[in-house]
Image 1: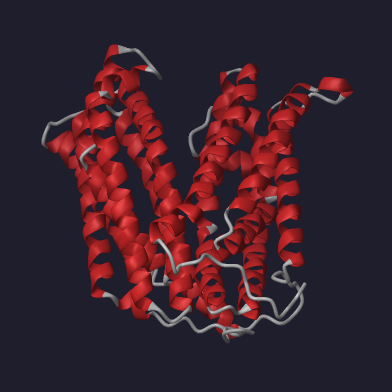
Image 2: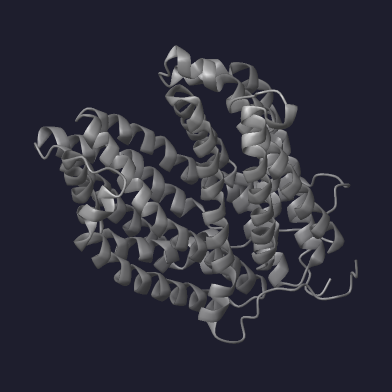
Length: 458
């Protein structure tokens, strides 16, 4: 652990587009691997019957909300550690990771202690049938019990991302996927003399594989001299991390929560409308894979630029990212619009499902350009630690616009299912407008982040 060696960060002296892709593409691959992890679980659990599939899917939704809340610590670490990395402050990165880990473990431990014995109640709260509760109670309880481990993994990943090293966690994710792929059927069905664990086996396969990834990330960061567990918590550091992270957490939790309510609105128009909504989300999730990778790159490089004391470089990074995102959206938009029906039919060929799903994709395809702009505006502000404007944008657009607009368009104005899609489109435009205001005001370029140990060259 050579203290005097400079931190390895992204080279921003050359072509910015190349630097963005250097950080972005491993994140995209990592998101694909995470999706595959859930698909593999559902593939094997599907052999146990519809009640178990429903249980795992519902438990996954609950956990998804909790993981979104973990963005409090992820964004807090990313904003502070990327600035420290840009300033070549090894001590600053260490302090960021240590405080992020302690806070994440403390909060998630409370949630785990309270939530684990209530797993059955939580599933019933979402209206699950008795057989679904019976099938999913153990699965959810096991994963809630180890929630601190998942939160710790999210924080360590943010540490790698702050350095611009997204390849290492991508390779670790690949290894955990392979382990999970092997363990799933063994533990679910009780192969090789092991007890048959059903859905709980899928939970244990996830825990074992993810634990290996957590240990690997911790060892690598420790060897780089960036992970330390001893030392007092500094009140200023805790305050800074929470000031940055809490708004980001509210922003992240908003989407899955309002998404559940939107499904409730869709169910009023029948099973076909609900299925079309689910399929439409699956199709658009492909777009969010590359937008998510670009957003991660933007947050990292903006943070590093500001850590170097170069706000104009941070602005240039954001502008180049916006250009790349909009360019990609221009390529994808006509495909979604003109091939909407066959895309939906891949998942379900029911005529009404195809009709509703096609309407969904065609109404929202023009919004892809807006999402490209939003990706750049939001990632710049989050990377700078200016997370309040993105939080306000998410809260207003999702709670204040999307749900009421969907109800008005679908019900009062008589647009039916198409009205739901129009409500979503309006909310995207409103969110982009608020993000644009925050971005062009430029306050994020001069956002002060008080952080111990951020002396250049330390």
